[in-house]
Image 1 (cartoon, rainbow, N blue to C red):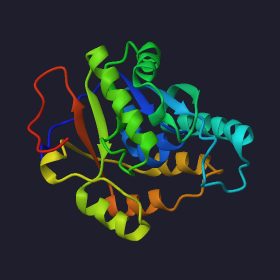
Image 2: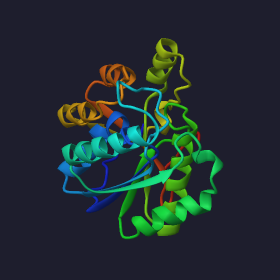
Image 3: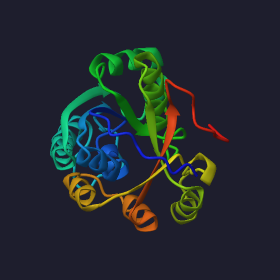
Image 4: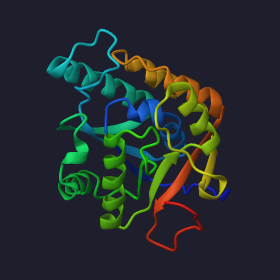
Length: 230
């Protein structure tokens, strides 16, 4: 494991597939970056209208409107200063031309110093997460800024696969480029903002991770770190 320090970027762009990804997945990482002085800007590529995690939140346009409000509230909890909410079809990002999505992200976040997204494989294996990651990496190449992917160790992914039956993707020690110590208070507060979504997985994952989160360097304008995977 490369225990190198995460650079204290001044402006960081965040690329996610759905409202709640910034909280359920990236929440503690974003709080960590904000606590180090980063101005955070978020692009969510869908409005989450196709979610099956509903807790009385409606469906379709009604759910999309509710989730947009939840996202704004959660973003404020995490210190995200600007939210760009796109309206691409939830559950169908992988069917859209990637170049089009990359252009949207580059236009929205063109003056950031780094991008943060999910790891390759989308961590949970969701096709929308995977597409959002590839979009972020291509945008990072266009902008010539590093792209950091939030990831989990393989032993934790294996535990989650066993407990929930979902195709979680983890990494071995050699591919965990940064380990950061986090305080999860703001992440829990942000998760609570997404009241339309009932999901036990983030709580179990946070329990397994404790106060640690992990990042991979998905793209670097300079020499990449040693890695055995991709």
